[in-house]
Length: 251
Image (cartoon, rainbow, N blue to C red; front, side):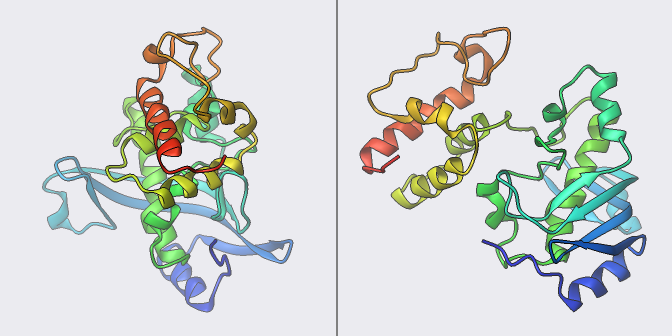
């Protein structure tokens, strides 16, 4: 769990780097930051790295985007994240979803309107030194809005994307090279915090079989076969079920 206090150093960093963002009010004794976020970032395809506020020598390769969004950051957690909740208040992302006939979740907007910056099980990977505003912006917030701007122009997610809801956890788990009991237990703890846990829990039981020709668990109205809809999630689910059994993890 992160300490979401806005320290003096965090406030100084915000003023120096994003002066149009202001600490305006408090909700439940927690601060709210709001205003216009200007960013400048270049992304390099060859090694998936990026630079925020690049210099001229950084622009000879990679894809640069300079853009701005009206945002609000509320320093409280949710079932989806242990980090501050970030909202886009200019309705720009909403308009992109409407113009392309997409659902909000297709543009990584959680129920309630907060942006899905990453899976909550990934948060400590992005913030290994704990919560601080500089790392939060540099590792999550700016790359998120860069990805939104890139998608708005190209309809491509620059570094891919997971599915929606708990399906994403199965896709994430498939990518994990080394399985261990602690990692499995940590994943289950995160999944149990979600409202859709009651839907997915039965499928993680060793006694419940789910095959590729079964209807996908993503909830698609088209009732597509799992293997054709979210193949990686299916294989991640199988992998997780096996590890739950092998490590004797309780659900």
